[in-house]
Length: 376
Ligand SMILES: *Cc1c(COP(=O)(O)O)cnc(C)c1O
Image (tube, rainbow, N blue to C red; front, side, top):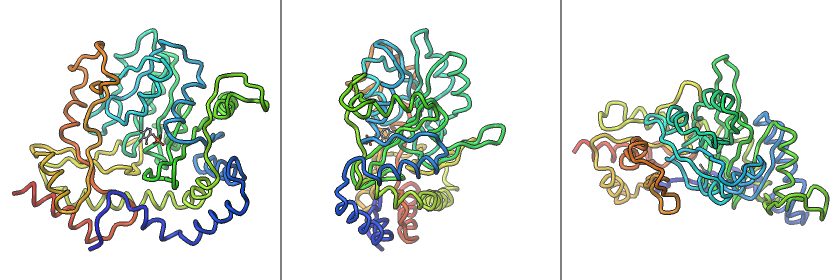
């Protein structure tokens, strides 16, 4: 059996090596390293794939969130609501911009933002909601869009983990994750579902005016060369990353399907266990399994974590600490009673190896090792 990896980037590269090597070489020969034609072409191709009017490439997923928030004219003290159970980047940029983060609990089956908790958190100061499409499936966008409309709030979708997922509206129409709110953001960090070979990110919008604003902000607030209308940042996707992404984008649906197959293998293997809750997919979204995360019942999660490591099976705890309990984001306003689900999930979840390059004996070994541990 080949050694098991949490994410097998080398194996994925081997399959497209000829194309990737040649296109990187071409970028080097062209010397168009920044804002070259590769970046423009990738932008167009991603717009087409996502069926969105504007893609604005940038340097990483955290920048994408920050720039998206900068584009909306929010002011110090405005409240921005996001989920308590996620990666810190989302709340980090809210705080950096001197906006007030408001964390709310998540649903225990999908791990996505809880709509009732969100509604309770809305105040006259609330200006925006940042749903995170966690682990690869969409949050309840139809409900979120309704709440946003009613209270006149912006929606920024943090789509770093669900690129390629489809949202199915109740009238049967579908949209790609990240293209439903006012702005959507993503990350091309190497281990994301569409990863480059360094850092990268992008912002999506269907709003022409916002797109114009965003393109200026990523480029030092310049709309005309050396005229700085607003305070911007320097956030660019470079041409080498763009060319890697161009090679990988046509495979994204295949990559998502490969992940779904792995998820199906895991689901079947664990179907009869009373100690394992396998991922629950909402009926309004497809799942692209950025992570495959189990919720354990009556199992010593930390002991299983160590047991798997001892057997050469990498695994991870996403996320071990709720954001509202992090030193940087703790606040007297928060009441532990309001975070029952997150406080419980952090003790019971475990994410298994998930990527596009598995061999069956590896999956068999992973699932058998887990079942043996739990049943003994
Ligand atoms: C990865 C990730 C980010 C940050 O992306 P970077 O490219 O690493 O800056 C933001 N939000 C979520 C939910 C992520 O998973």
